[in-house]
Amino acid sequence: MSIKKYLFANWKMNLGITDSLNLAVKIKKGFNKKWENKLELVLCPSYMALGVVAEAINKTSINLGVQNVFWQDRGSYTGEISSAMIEEVGCEYAIIGHSERREYLRETDEMVNKKIKHCLSRQLAPIVCVGETGPEHRAGKQHQVIIRQIQAAFSGVKVTKTDQVIVAYEPVWVIGTGQALPAAEVEIVNSLIERLLIDLYGREKVANNFRLIYGGSVNSENIHSFLAKKNIHGALVGNASLKSEEFLNIIRASVANNN
Ligand code: PGA
Image (tube, rainbow, N blue to C red; front, side, top):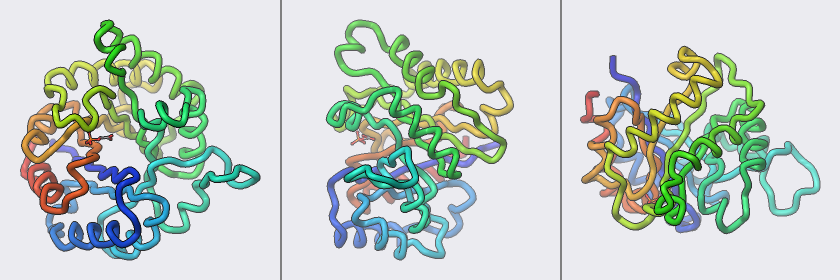
């Protein structure tokens, strides 16, 4: 049986309100209703543009995500945004622990863990990003890093029957380079992630409540190679999600894939 594919457009800090709205409208126009059952499509604009993008995709099956969320509902946390706030605009997903936040904002495994717990307490699906840096990769520490990040991220995290968790393997050293990791290598890492999650949650829960995706220089040329693998359920797309035609090509390739 084929399972639904997941595509997340991570627009990062690239588009303001007007550009985000224009792009969302173009994607909406190009998105065929027939694809709804095959693909979960999620747009992750900047906080500033959440409102207008939410309006643009209202009454469609396209969903909304944020690029980050804080771990408290409210309080004196200057500059932070809570899940209660983003719920108001209809957000269902939150990217957690993206490598750019780990690198530039010093987000730690512990913070990632708190954010995941917070998301799940609010029925927000976390997209948990893990992946080794270039130096870690060259030092042969790829698996070691994944094991550490997964164990720390999910430490004490309870996943109930209605929760949904996405884990994105994103090798930091290929993000934004135009050179994706071969799908066969991603398949090996995703098997490792799956085994770690099965140890924590059991086979049934992992099959029902978790989805494993890949991110790092995904484009319309290579997306099919990832989705052809049984344990790669979708992609987190950065650069290639910023141009409507290219992103629509990725969408078309994803729904054409019948694995
Ligand atoms: P990229 O970004 O597709 O531009 O490599 C992916 C990401 O950072 O999530």
